[in-house]
Length: 153
Image (cartoon, rainbow, N blue to C red; front, side):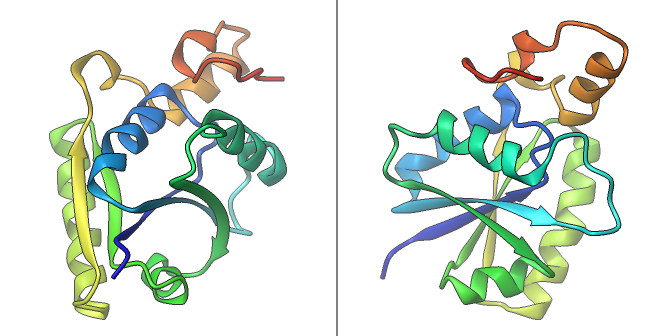
């Protein structure tokens, strides 16, 4: 059986932290699907098309990475693509508490889907998309916090 992990998120925008989690997960799985969740009630800073294109650009040389979009529950998306793992990054203990609850609920909905946590590297633990968006809203330079080649325009 192919070991497929889904790495869900809004990736608004993708950060160096996201990139690191995917790269560190590649030896563990046959395939990593970066899954951009679509939420009609959420106002995104960047368009879905731009976010998807950036992620495809970042992982263009990695054949084990695929980029998809989805609506609804992550666990249901996993079932549609036959993924048995959900990949999540942890930066802080607060992340763990939040992610643990979601992982337990996903397991309750389908005990054939395991959540795998990868702890961020120390130098990337402060980076998140919300902070990157705030930097951009206030005219700051967010380039140091996103993968190489991403133009935040």
